[in-house]
Image (tube, rainbow, N blue to C red; front, side):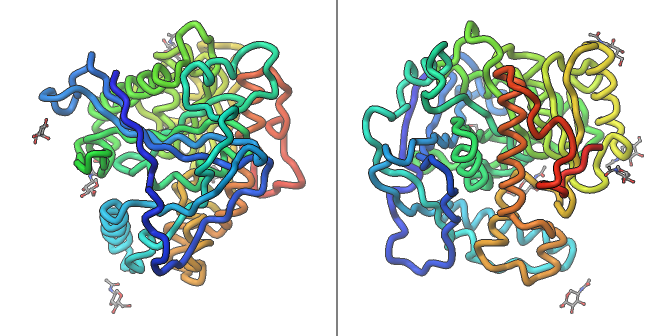
Length: 394
Ligand SMILES: *[C@@H]1O[C@H](CO)[C@@H](O)[C@H](O)[C@H]1NC(C)=O
Ligand SMILES: *[C@@H]1O[C@H](CO)[C@@H](O)[C@H](O)[C@H]1NC(C)=O
Ligand SMILES: *[C@@H]1O[C@H](CO)[C@@H](O)[C@H](O)[C@H]1NC(C)=O
Ligand SMILES: *[C@@H]1O[C@H](CO)[C@@H](O)[C@H](O)[C@H]1NC(C)=O
Ligand SMILES: *[C@@H]1O[C@H](CO)[C@@H](O)[C@H](O)[C@H]1NC(C)=O
Ligand SMILES: *[C@@H]1O[C@H](CO)[C@@H](O)[C@H](O)[C@H]1NC(C)=O
């Protein structure tokens, strides 16, 4: 496995026109952002056998605030990716005759920790593996959560959410691109692999199951890279948005290291639909998307509970949300000042603000992973809370 590191953006944007910086999460942590290319020399690319499988990941690592010596504002996306994603969003919205202001993505920035006191740097494998050791409860990060993206959607569209989750939970949060499926993946050498090879057709079940299997192997590559060996047990969480939801279940079937999964509003596909999973699983839907309206959710739930009588499975619904709950769209709406557009709110952002959504996700995912991976109580997952009335237990 060959590793190439790069800083996501070498502070390119300084001095240019600036419309928005995502708010820095107000927690005891600052967050470091690194992008890496991982190459799996043992595996020909399943979509293009002329080269080994290579993927890109974004890693968001919480740093205790006192150990972060400097924060920097870095571009949310490279110019190439920003203009590509502008075009993708424009095409998506055009179907509803809604327009998207071009250039928004290119003008956004994240404020991340760019200089870390050496002792809390966690870029070495050993350091990460060690954070799971007994008696090191206060070590940072407290654990690892992989984030699965929507079908044909860049990992870069999840950076602000991932930064917030890392800062809110104290976990390393790693978002993955899956080349040839992800709409566009830009590598450190500037080359780009365009996606769309996996059909956006719910009836193409074999192609979708294959895409999930590729994602599961990509996730295994990431865990190997992070130094999380098979012997580490069920220590990693997986939260997936849309197609990332069935990816969470798929990897749980195939990789013991993933001990807990979250499906955020995704229709289920792959073998897990009929077999279920044997470890804790949470499904969170937008209004009306639940096991009554989506038979894949019902089948997955029934298989999970029938085959594993003691497994924990719950279903939640987030009022005011739209599809893409785990993505950055809600936060982009807040930061770019686009919430005046009822059409954009209805189709892309949701009535609930991005700030409120990420607040809720932070609290509920943190409690879920602490419960499922560390044996704590259910916390907020025990039942409805007056503090979070938007979160409905289905
Ligand atoms: C496969 O990858 C090679 C580079 O290794 C590239 O030149 C070629 O265009 C790719 N083919 C497809 C079908 O994407
Ligand atoms: C799309 O919006 C434009 C401008 O508001 C309007 O003129 C046009 O009739 C709309 N087209 C459709 C198909 O709704
Ligand atoms: C994937 O996204 C690209 C835009 O990058 C689009 O042209 C293509 O139609 C999409 N493919 C699928 C299968 O959704
Ligand atoms: C999927 O298949 C069902 C039954 O064969 C059909 O009714 C439905 O229209 C198909 N959906 C798509 C998106 O092709
Ligand atoms: C579940 O979905 C059905 C059908 O869309 C809807 O009528 C019902 O209100 C939903 N339940 C919840 C708790 O959201
Ligand atoms: C899981 O449960 C389903 C019924 O929901 C059953 O058809 C299937 O055979 C079971 N699979 C295993 C591996 O037990």
